Image (cartoon, rainbow, N blue to C red):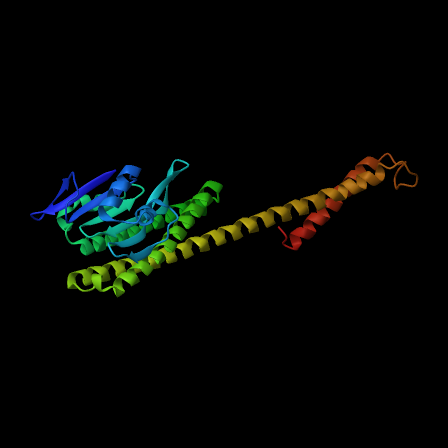
Length: 310
């Protein structure tokens, strides 16, 4: 799908055909759409398709006819009926007469800019690129706050009872934070390269905007690392609690087995077909054996209790 926007008389409008100074949005484009844009703006096929590969790394690449900025953006995926956080690439290409964005799916970053059309000018390509990067950093921050809120809710559940579903959800949040942290570090590397490029620092407004982007991205990286450390610490703590609970259960089982084994040994001895067993000819032999076995078990029980083993 392709949508084309152009700023005209300080208003941004959707147009049908590309014009000088337009913004071309490509979302999961078809082969024909890719071919049209590739031939129109002389873009290498690999660079145009880079954002369509989910495993593509963030990078800044300058060519003769265009500049490619590839960054990772937050996304959602459905798993077990719930939204899970992940990241996907977004390609931003500064061509000679247009700015082109390529993504696998529709993203809130572009949707937000589409709704707030007064805030952008498609003719100012570098500023529009930096605005997209700023919206991306803000989206990371919003998602990180949402992850933090979800982890706090799960923590309350786990304080009441450690259950597998809650632990699995906490693990998924930890995985999402790992994706975010890795992607943000790659994005920061791209921002550092942009900061060293004269094309993005020659204009004072662009330079200030780039500085804002770097501040927001750095904050998002620090938040992701902090939240990831917190969740990993919680998972380690819950793992230790589960292990400790298992050890306690095993200790109780071992004590119970020892207590039960003593009367079993006495009964086995009296059940043997041999002569010379004490009280074998007494009519009180049965109650005596039962009583002795119970007393022996009670003695062992009191011993373990005195040693505070349960």
